Length: 106
Image (tube, rainbow, N blue to C red; front, side, top):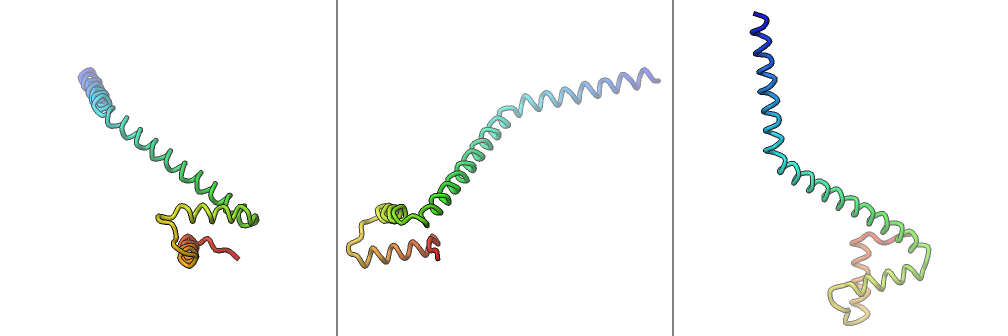
């Protein structure tokens, strides 16, 4: 009786390992794609974090340096969709952008 039980136990282990190997072989393409997408997502996330930190450091420096602040303001004004037609429109855009982006400081 013990030999019979042992043979079935070994057969069960062999079937279980066969299923595991078959699953690995069948799912390896899916897991590679999932791993590649996860790596791309993590790379994009770390790039966004690094960019945000760099922007924060630049903003901190700009708050203490008038020349840097004026350069940033000029760059932001140039990056708007259409050039301002007059000084009033330029200052309104700048004020709206400052409020929208919370760039004001005391």
